[in-house]
Image 1 (spheres, helix red, strand yellow):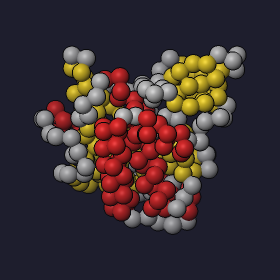
Image 2 (cartoon, rainbow, N blue to C red):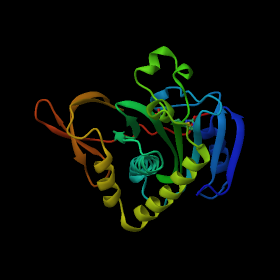
Image 3 (tube, protein in one colour):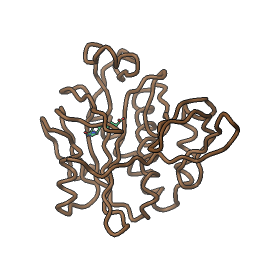
Length: 247
Ligand code: BTN
């Protein structure tokens, strides 16, 4: 994974660049990384701040031979790989907020956006977009984001080498992706649960069907989260507001 790796100085969104490669039929594993994005996108139609030289802004092409309903599992897998590699490299106490935000002390340092394309009910490819706020300082954020967002540098007082973090992530991804394809989702679910900061805590969950307040209690075998609602009813939710690749 990460071969070939395309580096762009400036780009609208690395998601678009990988989509073009995917449509050309390029094999899985290709990565596009950019020093800055002018139109980085986040989940739920939000934009994503990706200033020059301050973070890792990358997209990875996947062509997993799994049924389409398994696609959300890949989101959780990406969060686990990112969390484990960043914890190891930085020594920081990083946790996963459902489904795939990485937090330090309740503030977001990284986000993952998966976009998938299907044909005849079959998964054609997935583009895993990953943004890591590595060396951003307070002044790189608009006021309203400072409450919710942080960077590895703000959280630790140290700058980090982006190439080293990227390499660590790609190696961890490769190990876990292989484990997933060979043994299934169960081992990934267990790792996700052990790194989660969402389990056992009453929270508001935003789903494609709307907002819901409850206590997440674990993942089921398919990657949906099991939530106990205030009225005692237990429901399962998918993170999958996974959109088609957009232009
Ligand atoms: C989120 O938390 O909302 C997901 C953010 C994903 C951001 C990354 S940065 C690289 C890739 N290109 C994009 O335009 N978005 C993703």
